[in-house]
Structures are given as C-alpha cells and as structure tokens.
Image (cartoon, rainbow, N blue to C red):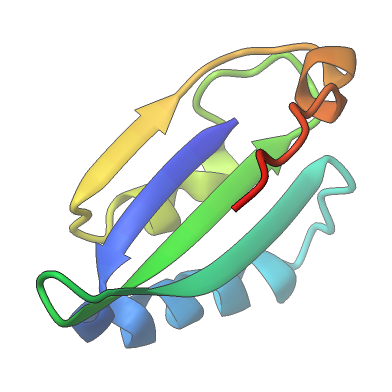
Length: 94
C-alpha cells in the first residue's frame, strides 16, 4: 500500500495521474485508489490524502509511477496482507 499526502496545489496533477491509471490501455485489476480532502485548521491548509493499494505483492507497481511522481508532503509504501489491511482498529470516542 502506498499512502500519499499532497498539498492542495497538486490536486490537478493527482487527478491527472488517477485518469492515466483509469484510462490505461491495459486494464490492471489489481489497482485500487481512494482519495480524500483534509483541512488542517492549525495551518489553514487543504491537503489531499491518497491510498493507492495494489493487491499483489509488489512494493512499487508501475501503475502508480505517475502518482508517486507528484510532489508530496509525505509518502510511504509497505507490503501487507489483505487481512492486515482489513483489520481496522475501532475509532476511539470523541
């Protein structure tokens, strides 16, 4: 799984990378993308959070090359089992 956080100024580049993945001539059934917008009230800045999951044991799949090439505030990649990914901790009470 690759987790990325991009500055809002990079949203166009992130969407361009998403489009390239979705419109690839060779459909890759192992790709999953989830994105969300986050607002940091301390810095008063919008960020885009992306989880790019490849459901085969490949740390840096070629399908994500353009996406990980977009300048990011933070980025991490790791291999994990689907069971570990699905085992979410409960949300603590607010």
